[in-house]
Image (cartoon, rainbow, N blue to C red):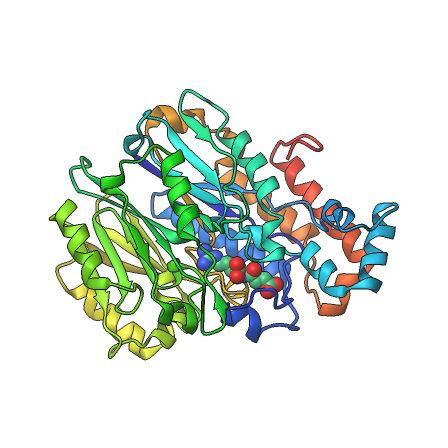
Length: 429
Ligand code: SUG
């Protein structure tokens, strides 16, 4: 199987509106000045880095922003700029929601079960409803449209409707897949939370995870539902991928990531005796440090030579506790042999690390060939994307700019230039 990482291109409206309760970085940087151009170039830089490691890379496009259609649903009327101006004078927070670039975090685009895990032998994809946060809930419709375009070939793919909004689903950010080295055994773990913890909502509901697993035709015996610890949610792990990541037969997690870590270890080893569980103890890296540095929001990937690498945010490199622990880890006999540091600071300032920025899709060669090639990257496409970003993306956005009609127009034009450069027709995406 070939893994393709589909990263979201950071949109021209990237800004710090502090919209995500329970996400410490988003709250801490609320009201700050963002740098959309730098943010988007950092994102493409990460994609290029993965490609130089010999990994396959894809992209999803920024969503239509400002999201005027969403404001219309809220009762604002008239031409686009009238709608936006009326919303800005009625409730600035609504315009901030309509300007959010949060679709960049494609780990929240949906949940993907590879063909080898499903009853009908198709790769199943369920777009996430993201219903807990207003600025994210409006993403599902455009995400679904992109998924249906990219994975349109029904010989290989089945794209579902999102789970009903009553049951919060945040996609692959709360999903981990283990596969035995032989490839014969796989475990798809769905991680959910309950109610609120520390005043923060658990965004992934168990009912939603169960619905996705059912829809994908997964074997319940290999699909554990794992409860996230309240301590993790209260400390700011609004998604499981802030405290745990899995790849191949390796699960890399913080000691306090799960409500019942011993139970999880037992369940995993019963199904997959050769699974490797690497747990970082709290007395080496506290939960707080793990969440501040996004140690676990690294991408854990298998390189072409079979070794695994952690693609870490620069913030993890800068913390002595984290870096010392990691240096010891790669000196040990585990499959994780390499540490690669990337700079995605602009995304990090809104709570999105390397792993948040990508959706993994595992396919065989025939299914890979069936993916709409406009969503797949090579160096030439990267050059083209960078040129559009450098030319069209705003250099900075301050909170008051969100109400400026020149910014609305500029962002719409910028997105149009990007979609055209990637070969999408007007209104196609
Ligand atoms: O949903 N931040 C995102 C970060 C998502 C990270 N994704 C994963 N962990 N997979 C969120 O909280 C902040 C937007 C703002 O405040 O303007 C935001 O939406």
